[in-house]
Image 1 (cartoon, rainbow, N blue to C red):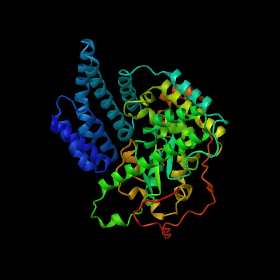
Image 2: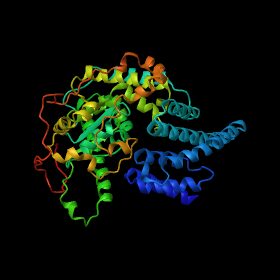
Image 3: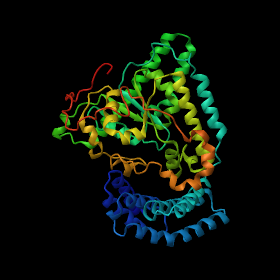
Image 4: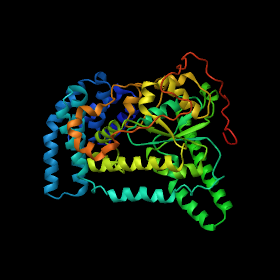
Length: 465
């Protein structure tokens, strides 16, 4: 059992690194030997491998589909038996999770292989049903109250002048889930002076402390105390970003590596946490000069993509049901409209569709907004070796592509109740607001242009940059 556990983790690592052949071999090994279906995440992992590259593993989809046709009835019987015997929440959840993963894998098979929308939808709906069976009902009132509370605090008169750190070191990426944020982060991370800090936001890790200490400083009644505290909190966030990158960099490169002395110390650190759209007020308070990039995608493409993906347990569980998903989307749109009204121009909007269809014009403007010189290697971001641990793992390795636009249309008849709940917000009349960007009429950057000079020493920059 321990061996299969270790093999599953190794397969997950291979998948993150884009080594599909190695990942597929390990996942198949686990699936063939895990007769009790303890490691059900191997079903999801194998499906991801063959979705990305079917011939990477012997048997491809045929192996997985044959296995699931045998296993689904057995898993269902075990689940029903556990429920009937009141076997305990943990056991019931395990079987429900297995059924969810099996049905989601069959959805992927019909979605990408057979193109049978009805069969695909039936499996997706059933998988989401098992997922929702193990969590409490969605509490819409709590989410609405959160947005109302944010609006009441961050009013136009809230923000004091001359407060916060003047540094431009952090770059914050926000938006609704499945909106193209991984592509945006990879574009930034492809620049020699910018690094991404991954899915685990440094800012969010300190958010509770930031809130509490700002409240305490505000109660003193002395603006100087508040100013010092906000500056201190901002400096701590930047320090943590740098420390995290140094650990990651040390793990990726040997100290004896000749290239280590030539890589410039990063000037910018991209912090991607999409749900930080609710925290723009705090971001602006601590970092009034930092770039905040809001990536937005055609609403139903983003919403359906969220519905069909299995997020890790947590706040996004309710994207698996129509009512919860629609409410989450409305709260997101309400929030972004609030920031555009209260802090006009503070958030820079980037349309995902513009990144894809006008990449060679958009990419230089993103780098320009970050305040670093242009480097043409950014245009080949997908060739850079990078561990991508996100639901977009397989897609982002292929560069930019547009075949998935309006992908939800294949399932439109099943999505009609969701369309009704989203209402007029199925449209999003939002323009890319990168300075100097025009959708048409701009000459693309030449790929063979010489890169701008960048600092080579591996010394930490000092001062605000």
